[in-house]
Amino acid sequence: MPNAKVLEQKKQIVADLTEKLSKACAGVVVDYKGISVADDTKLRKDLREAGVDYFVVKNTLLSRAIAGTDLEEMNNVLEGTTAIAISENDYVASARILKKFADEHENFAIKAGFLDGKCISLEKIDALAKLPSREVLLATVLGAFNAPIAAFARAVQAIVDKDAEA
Image (cartoon, rainbow, N blue to C red; front, side, top):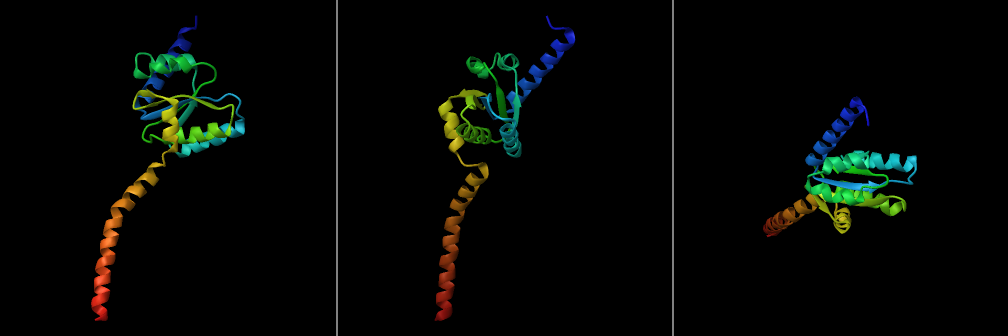
């Protein structure tokens, strides 16, 4: 039986983890065994630059944090080494970075994921990983909006040039 101080620390960790999970829009749970320190450091740097919170977590603590929520379905993958990547505002960053890393490292595996508090399948994580970043999507949408305006401006300029020639 753990002493009262250790028990309080664990309760605080579970409470903090529960809060992080509730604020997150997306997250991915991975099995990180067998990767080198250099690879782990590079992965953490890439995730940090994308605004993703990545940390190792004990299976029992994560299990307690998701108890009674829609994420409880993840309990069946909570064995072995477990790390979680959580993003509060980017739905695809964690999936994209971790999927790429998993493809490059055979020991690294994606266990589960969630979007808006609901568990998603590994196929959906793969689909998310293939989506472009938010900035690329916004640029594409803005380009689509800009195209008719640019065509109209070219047409008006052509009329002005034609009248100037006459």
